[in-house]
Length: 258
Ligand SMILES: NC(=O)c1ccc[n+]([C@@H]2O[C@H](COP(=O)([O-])OP(=O)(O)OC[C@H]3O[C@@H](n4cnc5c(N)ncnc54)[C@H](O)[C@@H]3O)[C@@H](O)[C@H]2O)c1
View (spheres, rainbow, N blue to C red):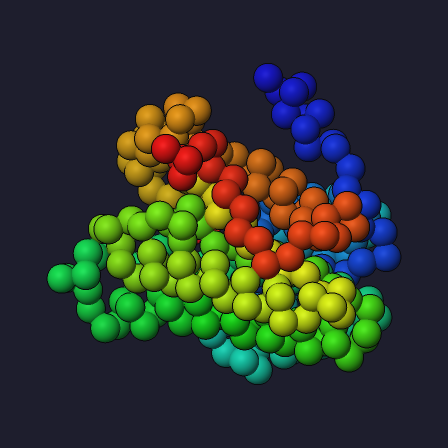
């Protein structure tokens, strides 16, 4: 099993000459994607609210020949996003890839119990934060005139609902349609925007008891691993995926198909 995983992780996607900005790159899917992109020969900037991002970036920087930098970023603040894009361009000469992975789960409130505070907090990070990151990356892509690729982290709960978490369901559904609008607006300029819709994945975002409960709800009778999402994100950002834009791609072990 371990060798099989190593083999899967070693599959190479060519990102030579590219610079990637990864929001939420200090943990979980963003961190796994940073690792995969550095391995694929991209330089990476991790933009995360958590100070742990510095240690993650330092470790990845010494693990690979490509460079990894960290900038403390709150994705709900437009000036922070602008600074993260600037750091990527000042450090590496261009921005070619954005992965918008910063996200929170919020409180498990069905709509009758929702509070305005939770709604606004979740939507600020999971929805508005994605819009702001996409906006600034696309403006940089347009300035460069060389196209670009964005992958937003939606969720399978953007395709089907989770009734016990109204804010997350709504925000992720919003990300799916935001992706379709952004991914078609500049398609003729070589700017592609897609989103992945993961099933439940083994990351710190998901409480242990929820992981257990969700296993049997997936047709594969397991939850996903971070590298299984990171590889699809990395593929979507490489040239082999150049005819894919505005797509919402489930990576959920079949959850949304039944
Ligand atoms: N893990 C799953 O099962 C799963 C499934 C579907 C979708 N997703 C989505 O994937 C994305 C990544 O999830 P994960 O599992 O890696 O979670 P995670 O908790 O491991 O990582 C999320 C990262 O986002 C950062 N973050 C949170 N708020 C931020 C803010 N305001 N500004 C900047 N950074 C902020 C956190 O510090 C953390 O490093 C999220 O959007 C999540 O909704 C996760």
